[in-house]
Length: 426
Ligand SMILES: [Zn+2]
Image 1: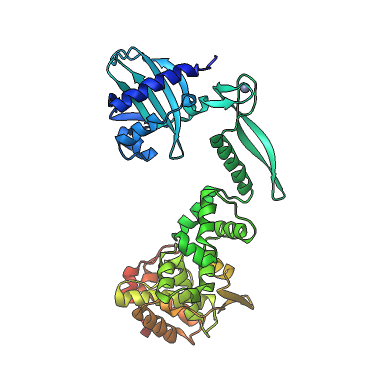
Image 2 (image 1 turned 135 degrees about the vertical axis):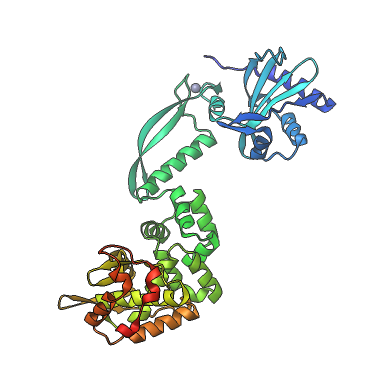
């Protein structure tokens, strides 16, 4: 199909149209709902999407229309409207957006029938082929190509936009930007990243761009650019994103290292909003117990159980959000291996294998600021009571606890039983 437009006709139309607008013979037809860029929206939403403030602005942009911004001349077939005249369809760049504008002149005045962000298909039609020296209805095809970037080579499935008459690849800004973004994303995908994932990493951590910049010692500008795809992280920046993607807990380690750069209140506010705050608090409860007190696994489990149930007995709530299950040798932390691994991986504790038993030793001092006054006094009291007792004694004591007696192997022990905790039986 030959879509060549006679631009002198468009020029004529625009001259008349502009005179009518200036005379005030103009009408903006707005329907309650319209289709804009594949979505059904209200006319007002469509104007909002472009950034149009008022009707004056609409007419200002129409007055600026140039003949070559027209991509189609058609007849109005809508009998209800009975405009019985030619419709001129334009694509104009407004506020960096491709805006679709449809105009016609009826017996009375100039009518603007559409003014909204152009559908992708419409926009694709109006691409200039310098080989054919005209606007063409571009075609698209998928193609796999290999690219090289920073020493890596990778395949990208591209959308090739080309002229149907001469096969020339057409790369107007929007197409080029879109395809380049795809190529950079394919590079990032080698590291299981993408611009979208880069943004998600921060969102999952529940921190602002400013806070992330401060924790990492980067500029906020860098973070904004990485998240919007205006820049590709490299070197340590890329490594940090890869690490945070694999292990989001790392943000706590990085925050700890920068503690002195924050005001105390700010530091704890950030910490409390992080998704691992509860785990971090539980780790610090363990560090409190282990301070100058390396103990066997069984003893550590009884200490943690006693700490949480003791606080729950006195104040209705435990200190950590850990759950405890009934095991043969007493109550133990639910999913304790995951919890140990988290502590080991981040070097908060180390293990010492003594005969066939495992002894836990703290590497860090606990951060006492994470605990309230009642929590600290409960930690202190519980540790003092249990310290010096053998693992066997602690195990026997925990077997006398009503919460253990009332449950079966593998079952959760409810904090409802906290009131029965009795250190006198130890
Ligand atoms: Zn061509």
